[in-house]
Length: 394
Ligand SMILES: *Cc1c(COP(=O)(O)O)cnc(C)c1O
Image (cartoon, rainbow, N blue to C red; front, side, top):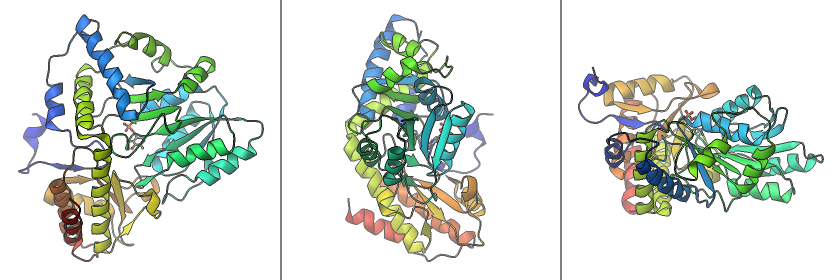
């Protein structure tokens, strides 16, 4: 039986995890077209135009490589194309996703150095600058930062990280994971001098899972010529050669590319800055609700508050997972779970992607009712606080 036919509850499911996000009908309709010959003439025209317009979302004039893979694949591609076995890389412990990326770097035989963090804020540019200044022999080949740490709801200031690298006069590449920020939070690949931007389809880009991206600077491309890590599927060279004429070296995820075409159009029509402002506004409304409930926001640094999700701590002695289970059971809404050491300690409200005011009010309503049903101590009035903010800031 098809998945949709097995749903027990009336009304639409609220998919409020911080990715995959709700896929807009226009994107679904775009994917609902016959799969075309990916070596035929029509595809070349489509592919060339799409690869060109995908650049706008990254704010880059440089190449964007698209893989039929989840974001994790694009992480590997960023490392494998630019680095060599034994290379030192500086990574920042912002949370669970930064930890997974570091583990991947180790498995790929790189030597990652992890700048310690407390999972309650973004990367610290001063810490990065200090470490790079100490690296007199320039052994560190890349600095890797997760722009929006989806496990904690903290957004690192990539502009400040760039300034820190420049202030240290260090030649390391800057690799940035924007999997849960691209298309949701202000991001500028070219202006911030990022060398490889890693992205995925299923979060701010409003697509189903299955596509991932590397935006590649000229400096990264140059580094890839000498990089010795083995790579085949992820190799930029075969990709970029085929992309010249709008094609791919192996079968692309054709129907997801139709969806990407529609999603990029939607972001352009809305205006990226307006899309970011909408996310900022929904995030602020959410934080007002959390404070009104008397609960604690996982991110402790207001300058690092994430606009794509909010991680909320449950009081000691209470279970975030039991709360999420209650909300799913009673109100047909999925919230994000706590990851790694935050398991059962936080729940995460995704407010990114194709998301409007009334969906936010519904989401917060589901949380407030769930807090009550699950017996989590809180004050009422969170939804009210959010509505007042939304109504006053149209
Ligand atoms: C979701 C996410 C990932 C993992 O992406 P997959 O598509 O699940 O492979 C990595 N980093 C961040 C910041 C994420 O939000």
